Image 1 (cartoon, rainbow, N blue to C red):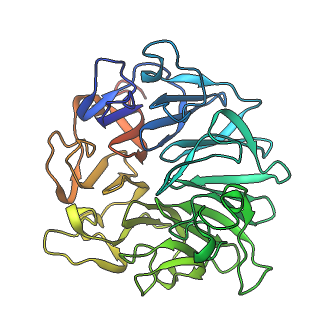
Image 2: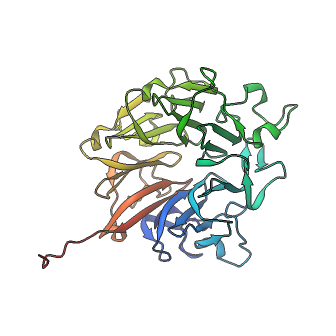
Image 3: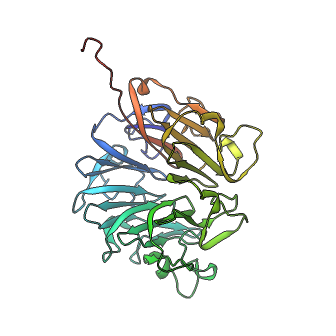
Amino acid sequence: MLTFGQGDFGQLGLGEEITEKTRPAAIPTYQDIIAITAGGMHNVCLRKTGEVLTFGCNDDGALGRNTSKEGSETVPLPVELPGKVIQVTAGDSHTAALLEDGRVFAWGTFRDTHGSMGLTLNGTERDPIQILPNEKIVKVASGNDHLVLLSENGRVYTCGCGEQGQLGRVAARTATRNTRQGKGPLLTPGVVEFKISKKLKFDNIWAGNFCTFAREHKKGDIYVFGLNNFNQIGLKDREIHFHPQVSKTFSGKEWKHISSGEHHTVALDSEGQVFVMGRKEYGRLGLGANCSDAEELTLVPAISSIKYIDVGTGSRESFAVTETGELYAWGMGTNGNLGTGDGEDVEEPALVKGKQLDGKTVVRISGGGQHTLALATMRLVKDKTAG
């Protein structure tokens, strides 16, 4: 595991003394990590054994474990869960884990413009608690302050903050906790109804900071809802969308991964090409200094000659991993979380270099609030004396 950026709350995983890295730094413990996810100021990783490790800020219980021992939040340590975990996800102040039997456990809290909402009606949950116990779940996704769950039968459930439309199932007038209904309908996971046909089934979900994407399993249409003030979900107007709509800019391609930051989206298609849309500021689109905001998905020409296997976003940053294990980064560089060695913004994709990347193949990337987490394996070297 490699980290870079700001680590004021231990989110670099390098102990109490190290609070900033502008180049990738290796976290020495645990060599069997298979999945990673960066939250606002914390990280979650999954071991091959199905054990979950967390580190970083635990002010709102996002680590799901006791951190009363000084410094224990600054290094990866295990979370107690009742089974083998197969997927992890993290938001600003919450974490979720999907077990192999389809149960989901979450901990931490959601936030809205008024502050902490709690994770459930009981408030902040500092220990893992089961979410949506009567459904078998096959995938989970986290936005900053909402959680999306895909059930075995193809239904989409959401819970958390709904102010930017990211839940897809509450109208504008009931999307805040200051209504007569309060926060109950927001914090209680509810199914998203797709008006076009209640028979629609979905086979994949992704969550952006303030938006949600769901793929219909037959035609592959991408339904979107949430914040669209810079066309970051691909709809023509710049409005908040409280209910699902097909985003036609995704039509005609099969999408492997969609990642969305504060005001932009990065998408990876099945051919390994990287597309962007949304706000251009700080270079987060990677389309050069003279580009405009992108109203629909646009190929990133500077890196279009290479195939990619993963993409990610921070709030205002973008990342792409090549099939040969190289990492490219672009966008806002102020916090050092591009890994380029300085605090400059990067207008076009830049290759991330560093001693800790020598001899390693990057396989996964995840952008957090002011830090970045990467997963790398040792590069296989062919034995020249063999054969």
